[in-house]
Length: 243
Image 1 (cartoon, rainbow, N blue to C red):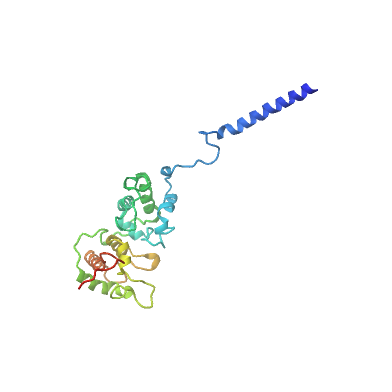
Image 2: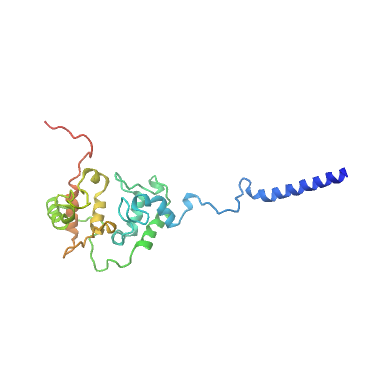
């Protein structure tokens, strides 16, 4: 009887050992389990995931209603173009809030991931042929600007919302666009992009505005030149005392 008990115990132990080995062999070091595969950061190529992780914090969950320029604005996308989006995402804007995301520039994204982001914005938020025959000002300025002309044009085109001096207008929620802190955070190109493409989610029209005649390239450049002239060399720093 004792022998039979020992035999049963031995058989049970052997069976248990086989079960543990069978269930656990796939979980040993170097052997992934049956759960979903976890991608390495550089392997993520899904636009929605990349955008949420890297862009939504500044540009908004769906490309709008963020602190930075609306990326889901089809006018902005049409004027900027996919190559510009790739370049800005990769290299950022030195000295401003937009960081560089390319690994070669100190960021965390591969060239392929940056290409996915730029193409995804155009694919999901762009509108092909939106600006056909519209002749918008070019993305980058190509003409020299004039401060005096810019001030005059600002009064004509922008003062109804921003006030004649750009400091805002009573009865509206629009703040100053010549505030030294604001100008320290944005580049001339960012201001130009906003003037051309507008801010749809905040009710700001694009370069066509509510005017009978849309802004020309020269008028746009002059306005940006005047606004940029309001920058201070060291915003929010003690100013030198002159005798």
